[in-house]
Image (tube, rainbow, N blue to C red; front, side):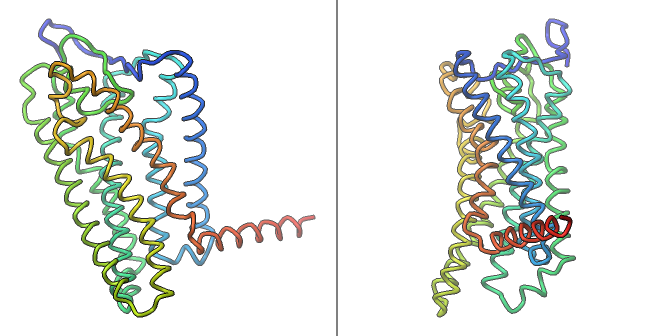
Length: 329
């Protein structure tokens, strides 16, 4: 961590959004409300799956409850710190805290890619192979998939995170972002950068592209199967479910691909070093804000907004609570 002028970087300054106090206050109020609602939505889904015997037996909702838990962790990795920096601009974050956030942020993002693929696999088996669905998607296999998503997600990014954390940092310690992300961190590092940035780009690109192709292939097969289905009623119901899944996938991969795959995106060091690159900071922060704070709020609504099973489970839970309260009185 020693720089060329023999100083040691022990902390960074998160520059945040660089906006006026009035706008910071509006953002603080808006994203505080959004964060609370996001936690409430995902907690509700987890409670429903845990307490409702019908939902708790279905692989789709076992996966969805874990996805909700992941979303809560994901949004809590960045948003509380962002809210603090909106309230107190120019917040200081220690070197270790920055790289812990950096590693957890990418690990949860990797797990989210894997969970989206797993849920696509679940819908593929349920619609394209209905006779074998319950046999293949047994509880043991479902929980094995869940464990695989969590474990691989947190193992995937260990090496590049360690390599990047070992870089030397020169000059300014100001990170022009509201979180510790690859591009802003690398822009402060002293050359030579070594293999960390290249390995990071390869792993992110491989994970995102591989899972995105799998999801596209799975849902394409599902849609073709539904179009050929002779049962129009069940076809419409299944297509409605799949369409909401596709919205979630599109929101996530659309923003992530724009940031980490397209040349000149967030993870490309050139954006931070080329003349005039500063003009892209606003777009970078806006897109990052969208997939770190907005999509975790939208995902539970999209998955459950028109889901009759979730509505019925909510009704059963509320009726049970009313009966319990009535009996006590």
